[in-house]
Image: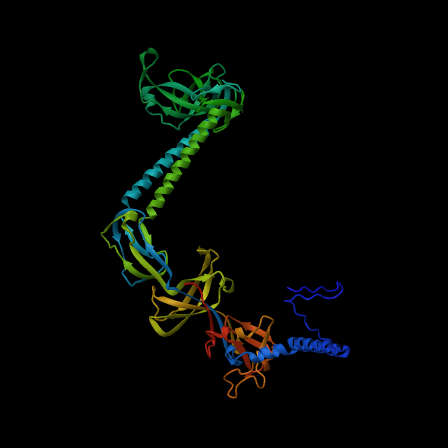
Length: 546
């Protein structure tokens, strides 16, 4: 093998290496390429900013939009629901007591008024119970009055207090003496008269009384004549005659006297006695809490002598009061029970059912419904409305009612009540809304109906689909060249005008335009948003849960 040795300063080429040729351009030519590249970049930027949107819009096919003309139509917003109509008021008559029916003066179909008699039951047993309760109340009241009266000891007649037997703070029981009272304003003189003479004396005759010792005479009146003969002095038969004499102030029980009645004189003398003597006693147990008299006090009939109190007396009074209250409650219950034997209509209406007649026997609530009454002056129904729509409803709103059983008829009602007592099922809440119908034609209770609550109505409104409105409140309005010749399709969306309009009322499908659009102008609606648009639809319905 031959070996060639080269200088170290010279390039050594391996057998496998080839030297790449180098291109050397003139200096002016390199600058021209640089400017060319800058121009291309600028064109791309301009296209991206200004021409690309139009190119993209032109590239949109007509199938992505549909043309919809702005038209005038009636716009109605409503909330729908369904339910069964019922009477405005209904009542099932039932019995609260047992007994035989004596009267049932009504029949099915009768129009009856509030309070009309429906059933009269035999009430003899209830009446006897009331009589017993009344007697028990009288007894309880008497016991109370006795205890209450006994808390104050009173004189039973007028007179002068002779002796007081107790002091304040003393404990007494029934029968304990409290004070002695004697009436000396009138004195009684008892004298013997010969039986034969006494037979001619009668009560009320005047008598002449002569005081022993002083021989002073006083006028008197025969009080009574005894019918029994007694043996007097010397064995003569005598009868006692009592003569009443007004005490001038000096007569005492120690004074003796004689008397004559007419021409008849007494057979002996006698002594004066006070016309009345009484001992006031305690009527209940307790403590003397107050003394109202002292010895020598002048009293009249019913004058308080002493007050009796303390824990024992108050307990006795409270027990007596509770006895009265208990008796009153028993009487009230008995009287209330008597009312249950007369069953009257709680409403005015029509009798729909009559299940019992005169002669039948009732077993209280176990008898079930005796009769059924409907107030057919109106009908009502209840629909359940979604929580999303309930805020739109309020009493007084008009409601359109239809029924499958009466296909060509429309009835009208009003919202009567909107309840806030909702029912939640699986996280979804509905609220009951009551609707009243005053004119209901051939509708009968129990029929299933559909209800449309009118929330809002606008006539002759300029309307476009809601889906034609962009999120910024603008719409695309077809300009020349945007539509086909017949106007049925969109051929160039890039020629549509983006326009800001003023929107009015609307719903889920249509919205009214109040400014910025004329009737007949065509708006572009995205195909994906236009599914389900009803051509020519004029009524918008917001569905409510049934």
